[in-house]
Image 1 (tube, helix red, strand yellow):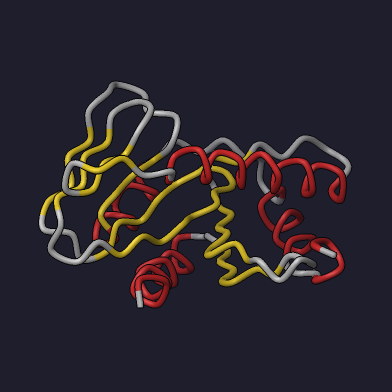
Image 2: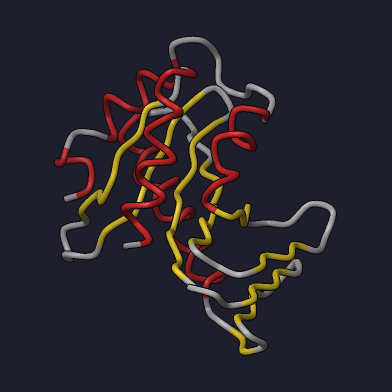
Length: 155
């Protein structure tokens, strides 16, 4: 459910020059919820549905109703893995930023000036991502997307 909500929000970014891939499959059977590539870079996005719960994010941890989660570490590890694979396949460095889309939470609080993982309510994804400064040279996002959409990249 959370992945579908996030997916619909992300699909709106296509009209702003973003490329979107959903449920990118690793050979192991695991998947990347969403991989987005656009002017502001490459992002892995994990969808986390926390219906009617309070989500708090500091620089190093996310708590849900006061209980710690592993969301940050998992998202960072996934982004590092994706960066390695895309950099190797593209034959140029592809930095990947981890992000978490929080779906249906009662409240999301983010503390910290420059958090290592972008954590946002799903409804804010489009506004925030399109507001980020461009970092990819023209044409590079399309090249990364071409590589990322090839299933052999993830085998």
